[in-house]
Length: 66
Image 1 (spheres, rainbow, N blue to C red):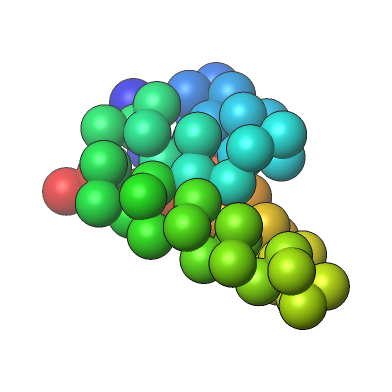
Image 2: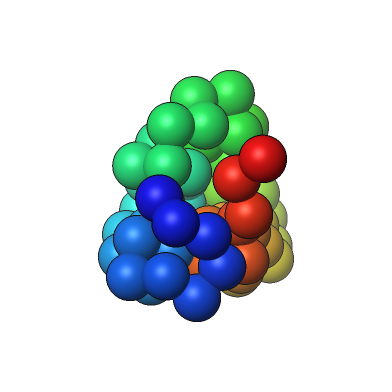
């Protein structure tokens, strides 16, 4: 992926919109994908999963590879 604002980040953010962590998985960040997916799944039981869901989308969209 080229970096922030690239088509890859837009695609990753779109994937995270549907499933939290999927965009991070697409970017090759397995640990972050697992963390965000599990946190969202747990917090949706308390109706707070939307917080992690938004974090996942923003994290995928603003990711800058080193």
